[in-house]
Length: 346
Image (cartoon, rainbow, N blue to C red):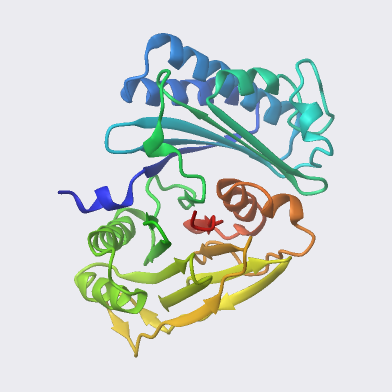
């Protein structure tokens, strides 16, 4: 059995597309429909996806600043979907509900025709912060039916390769059971295919050993990455019943618990997984009800704030990841953000 079956659904950020001129909408539509055809979407559903992507891209081009579209594939063992994330650094939308009404236009924002995107997609969310920008997320299934494999919305990650590279050297995994969630993030050293190979190896090892405590898993991956580029590594285990996070890290992965507008950092040991490591230890931290856990690579600065970000942190994990990457991903580097908003066990 492939080790990655323990980490499903598996997400691939297929394309990051800048929307900075009138031709961008056509490029975005072609990218999305090409992926849909490769994933077995029927002609009608692929065309509906194309309409929605065109609408999102056109809104970004006309009304936003620094707009980008991310096209993603989401795959389970037998089910799949395509997600589109629209991100802008604009003035934001004061009233998101009004912005999705047909024919409604909000100057300087995503505000035209979003009702059509909402109708065509199988899931749609928007988070907007006045003065900062907007994140809109739409998911498209290939056809009608229940997509239970893809239903989890308690954690999500987002990766972005360095400019000029097709592959991202950062990778992540999310594992769940009835009372725990495990987050794994690896930032492969350098950039390009060799960095991606190291981080993908870390994910495979992590998914193959879901019962290891975080510190043991970090040690196991450290040994398993010998002969690769290696990288920075972190594992966070969220115990939902006890309300704790057990964290172990090696290198410069940033890890934070966000609650009530405050960030509380978690500490990693110095070193490079696969090459050098001192004593690897795990530390336990409180996980208050309603808190978010954020892990990110050094493709983001650590200067982002959670203060006065109620709108963002009330959003989905994917919206939070996209907003933080927009705000703090200012370095010309591979970047990855992984966010969890765990629900208490039922």
